[in-house]
Every structure is written in structure tokens, then in C-alpha cells.
Length: 63
Image 1 (tube, rainbow, N blue to C red):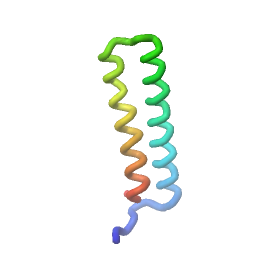
Image 2 (image 1 turned 180 degrees about the vertical axis):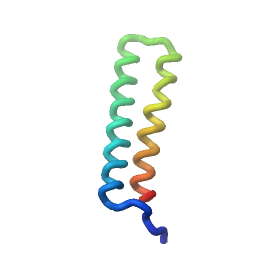
Image 3 (image 1 turned 180 degrees about the horizontal axis):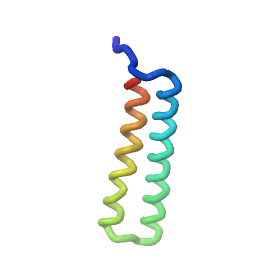
Image 4 (image 1 turned 120 degrees about the vertical axis):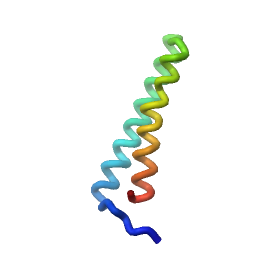
């Protein structure tokens, strides 16, 4: 069993940041599809998706 290196408040902050980042990426992705943006713009969604996933995984792993 791992010992968490952040407290409950830090976990909530990371989880909130992750969910908000991931949600923003989804909304931005939908917008880019609707306006028929070029593929490089859609590839740029990797960054907010990655940041969102990182925040969620860190919160769930308590690191």
C-alpha cells in the first residue's frame, strides 16, 4: 500500500483541474469538428487531453 504524498485537499484540486481540462478539450474538439478545422488544429488537442488525464490519474493515485 502506498503512502499518499498529498492530502485530500490536494487530491480534490488535481481531480478538479483534470476534469476541467479534459472537459475543455472535449468542448474544443467538438468546436473544431463543427467548424471543420484543419487536422493540425485537432492534433493540438493532445495537450489539454494529456494534462486532464494526468491530473485525474495523479488524484486517483494520490501522488
